[in-house]
Length: 316
Image 1 (cartoon, rainbow, N blue to C red):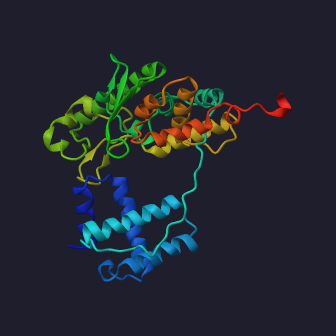
Image 2 (cartoon, one colour):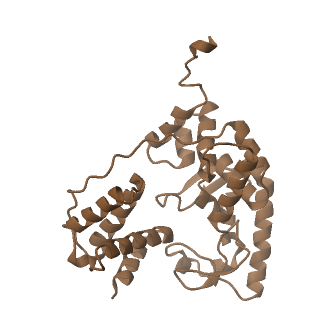
């Protein structure tokens, strides 16, 4: 069996996401090319250290990128090549810098949202109003939103975890419009004989008729059919993240906000504004899906209190 096939099998047995699989394989290919197409089984810790040092010294990659490359190679050697004795202690990673998150003021968030409409508006209301990540919002299925209880169930969040968060009242109307659009597309697919929808892990075997049911369809369903890269079946996936990222960026520019902001800034703003309103940090941690409260604590450093609540002498 070829190396890529063995790698793909190990990734899917471990229930890794398709994005992680593609990213890891990209780093493995880069590693092999760096060492002039030598097979990884003939290399080890020294070659990994050389490659990682090259990324730092020559490519000047960020610390997170270094860590991702390292994780990909560790997975390759330990899970694919069964090299548990792998030792890379000679390589010392660069120190991770602490970056404070970029956060909108309430006025800035409102101005940016005012320049959006349709599905980009709906997704943004979920990021800012419920603290969802972009991927989490796009992966929502119709059954995941409970309008009666005003709840959203986030499935397969970061770290493959599930959580329940609030359903913003301002998002209800436009979400129902998106669900209706998804229903129309689903009925069109069924009429054309397309009954496939991607289901994670073993759910496809557990619910063989899920593709026929509206409840399992994505709320933000794509207008076009596509082939599932894992199964090869043709079905309807959710819209591409880039379409939302582009719309958000344009809205930020139109709103005249001069910050290095992105979709994730709305999630940062959700947490910060809840803390400003006096909500308990443990509650915010639960809504965001953070395992450790220390991750949530970073938002206490960007609260709108003018430099840790200190009054400037010039304003006294």
